Length: 594
Image (cartoon, rainbow, N blue to C red; front, side, top):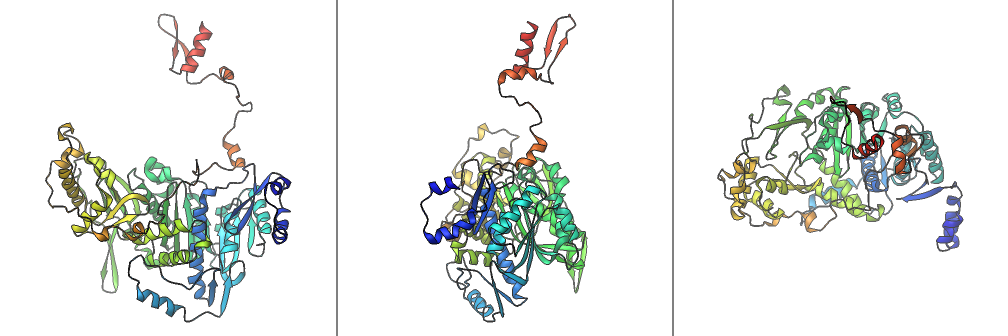
């Protein structure tokens, strides 16, 4: 404390009075981490997990829960008030203002509820929130301080040290009236709250790795129409590096393809829908975002036996060509309207032949994945309006505004995407400019958009044949050396066919989206060096590592631990030889034999 005060300028009397009670709670070795309105006591020994790069995740979650609370509590006669928020105006990315949207907002605001609540106040008709894996409790403390309309926040963690720290942080931030610390197994806690009157309105799960083991309990413990906030940081599994592991956790086979980040979003949505269907429940995605090493989904959960029957027709298998990267989706089921009744039948397929029609290569089979829209655009517009209208509320407001702007521009009924560089790499030609390629698709009469999950992504309703025709036309203007192409390569077979359409690469005005014109911060910028998921907390790491009691500090001690992979064997001639190729072990054994 003395060192900290000596390094900082002397505060004024008013500031000193405010900081004095906060600094009294510090223990030796502790530091204060400030984020949003929260100030968290954090041990310097990494006994409790904390990742500062996830500030964007926490800011976005606060914004989403605030808008969810605004909509839900308005039905209960409660008005949510956010400090610094101006009169609600719908943000439109089009150049001309949408007068109908503005009139709707004014009409909705005409009838004001009798009760108003602000952040930090306890609302008896408010939301019950559970953070199942709270660690230091930073997220829960921010909920209590920044999200209005809450009745209670339960911050749970299985670690006793984490639970004790959560309790101290709640007292340190003055939110004991809202936040309760819990030291339980997250799954057991949620299973015990499955009763209709005991369920939580919001459940937030942000585990270190996969949330698969908590999903079954979560879909049961959330209330009717409640909100699930799920984070997955096991992107290596969900992005195709280990398809069999992905299937064991989420019931879906991942594929290593350019669209792997959006496929990861659709895999977790498929897993949630499948687990909810066991209990006659179904999900409604509000917002799904992919940010480099993790994904974040926000879904509402409802109950309805009739709607659950639609689940099969919402899932699809993915046929991905290993040669050219073309993909096709095969729905798992089919539903047709028959008057007042809905008829369900198995889907027909497959949509592809034994070989790819474009390059002659084989197909990989992935999925099933969620094939319906992954965002609720009206809800996303509300969150975007709130964040852009009050930019000082969050430290990452610019990033949130940029990403949500891209989300509103995406084609919601087009699953997955292509990338311009992968199309060019397949036929070994120069990469066409993004605006020219988008313009060619628009000239051909197809819809096209960017995707928030990848910088150079192309989402379009055009079939793969049209994409390759456009690339053939581009190759004619930028020819490749065909004599160097192998006759069995995908590029040779694709370029051997003449294009069936004449592509026009003249840039159109509507080819450049508004988020790009406005130079919004649309993608993650590296905040610091080595900014990945970070290491586990120290107490968990001890269980798996540091098994040797006497740690090696000098390379000369390596000979005390002989390598088990290499052994000394005898040859038929009776001479001794070495089995193995490890240079370190061989040199050691050679010196011993000599």
